[in-house]
Length: 64
Image 1 (cartoon, rainbow, N blue to C red):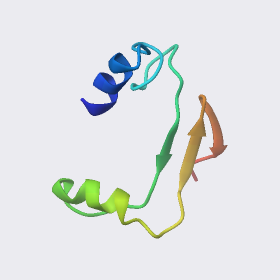
Image 2: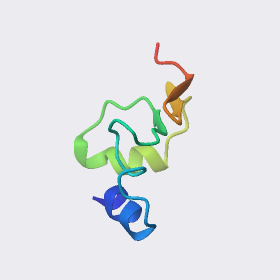
Image 3: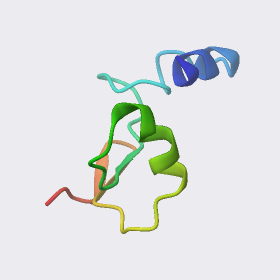
């Protein structure tokens, strides 16, 4: 919700804020094995290495 509405507010709907064909794909994957309700805190407080990173649809650090 936050990313889709943020994209609309910036006039970039359909290009950012979602993972779908034709959109910029920037994302990271971090280790997490907790409860879904703790996910936001896990992202903010993460101290471990990023496991994967995608920038503009290309893997900068491939999952492995």
